[in-house]
Image 1 (cartoon, one colour):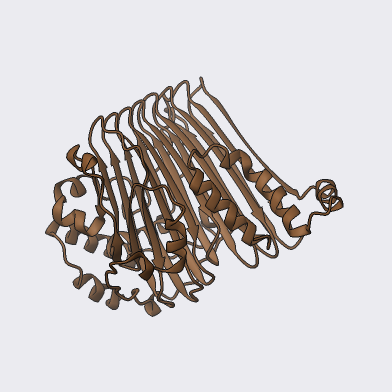
Image 2 (tube, helix red, strand yellow):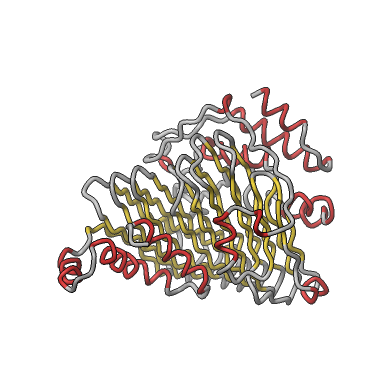
Length: 450
């Protein structure tokens, strides 16, 4: 791993960050790549030669939207974000500024590298606090005399450690107490250098009674042998509200590995949406740590895998305080020879009474060659709770398909209609019209109806 040490030596930053990066890289070198023997990675294998990895090339700033990748230009014509960053690999190549009234209220929105330089005290306070280099020990607090859940295998932190050590840039959002940001903020992450890796971080902090929506989009052309490794930290203080949307639409050949985690305080709400459409292999972890009494987490996701795509989603709803609510709804579509994986856990700690938690995973199979693995789980250590989980996997309704075809509708259009209808109860809970329209456009392309 000498070359990673060389890359780390070239990264500039304050001493506290340099120390943290160095510690993270040392941890990375001690960990194995998670294998199928690790329960959380049972159905997904990442074959990566770390010695062959090279960082994504640097990119220059552009001054006009027309110089951005076509996919970003197309999105900007239909997005409703109030301010945004465009990152190509490690560099911010284009940005818009926050409205002056938000800046006057103390809202900060910039790239993470700039935030370290200009707002180092805030970044130091929160960076790595939610997604550390190592895998968080989410062992359930159990009653005396009982056996708590098994701690995560250390290897589960392999990629998080690499991201913590070698992240190059990302987004930083800070919303002060009592401030509401009405229009969403966003970042568009692209890659244009095949056979490389990019490590990024997103850090969103909403202080007490603050409110913000952040849209995090990833897109590229086909890039064989390319890796996108990331971490997302969501800090939701007392009575704050954060909505986080991740739309992953990397090109063929990209391996996407990202850990997203929210720390939700008393009476706070975290709404998350994870959309997985692109890349060849994608592993996304979404975790909500319900730290405060009365906290609330809505976890939504949808995915559409075709060809030989392999999509793995791992979720955790960890109830550590009483009177908290969480609702998870993941819906996916598998076509051709694709593979879908869902592994979800509801953990309820001792003393987290009056927990109200739901977990539902539904999969629509468009091909007999596709495979899907679903592992919903509960671990409850309180005796006054309401928790449920369930999973279904089913083929497309042939009668419904025949009905649409008999009305003169082409098969591709009919399948798009059925898929969109299947995913509607997720899309219907997303109050961002431009995001929903964009997702529906991707679905149409997936079934050949665009």
